[in-house]
Length: 181
View 1 (cartoon, rainbow, N blue to C red):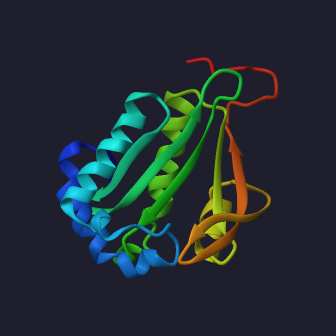
View 2 (view 1 turned 135 degrees about the vertical axis):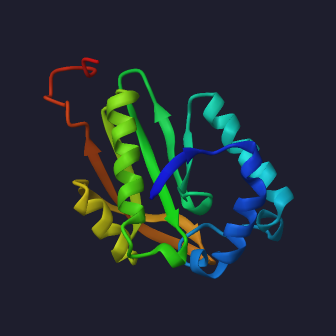
View 3 (view 1 turned 60 degrees about the vertical axis):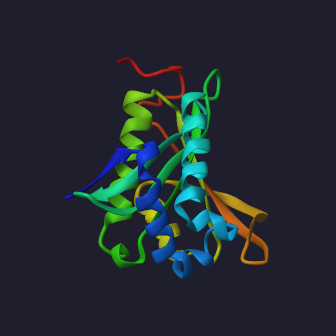
């Protein structure tokens, strides 16, 4: 059964293998990375940077897993507390797991954590205009389309447009600042 588990420092070798296996699949969607990114050493550095952001409260990072098998990544980025109470979600799934509900279950789990455990009010996401499958994923899970973000991300040699999405917490009634735990 697929699920999530927190990213750990020991995940670098498995992540390097997963990124190498999905390099062509991700080339269209993910920002360009140097060759070292696909090595164990490169992943150690990337994982440590991510874990540093997690320790500072600006990010949460999980692996999508099926038993011991890694199927992808999901992050809650740019976590903002105070009067905003929000974060931005990003995820990707192994090409062999596409179309099997893996991304839907992962994102739904992250939303539960975000709203019910962290008490955040809003989750946002940006999806490339040519990524119809991800647009359907976010819309199926109740995200509202906000509009176009021109030249949002530099991928595969050029700036790419994205559509902004948001989903408010189910406890939001327009009045309460935080949920009642």
